[in-house]
Image (cartoon, rainbow, N blue to C red; front, side, top):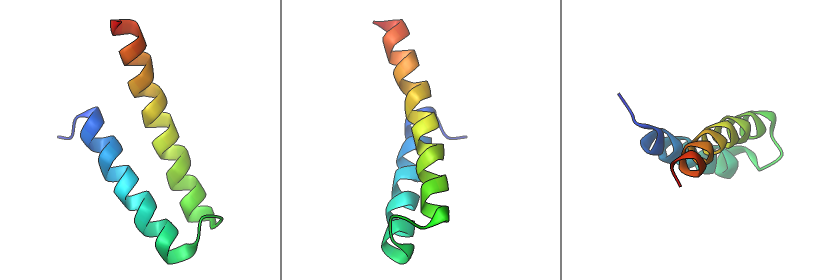
Length: 51
């Protein structure tokens, strides 16, 4: 099972690959970017609550 940081890193790598293949405006790239945004927001909420 991936922890949140590992999941973020995996999505980041997938996003970069998709952007290289399809360009940054392709719907599949935008969708992956939004998924990554959600995880980053979740991570930041956790960091903020632990500060």
